[in-house]
Image (cartoon, rainbow, N blue to C red; front, side, top):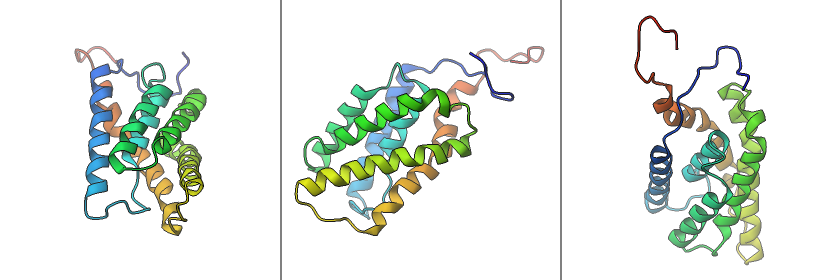
Length: 176
């Protein structure tokens, strides 16, 4: 694969680390939903950020099926309409896999701008499902959530790629 100039060569991703990071994101999502803000409309969906990140960086390991499963878990946790998060996460997974090759050519701040429409589409899809079920409009603060999720993209890139950036056995005489 041709790499961008200045791009660091990464080690292979550990499947256990991928699973652990997704479970941590799920746990943080559950804690945030039960915390001080409850299910406020502006609160970012950390699990969605992790799912999109791994769908972009490891599309063979984390895909639409994984996203659908975690969406069902979030539906059960929130007591939401069964399939609401599952549909939104599956759409996120599909769109992330569809654009993963193009997205990786951009630097991380530009990637954050590129994933903003993905998060916005997922929130719009979730809102449409709720509207069909008879729920009202959650308010204009709902538009902040995709922006905050997109702003978290560089943080996720630093945290989730950190184990892959270390050298397998560092040596002063080897440039990699």
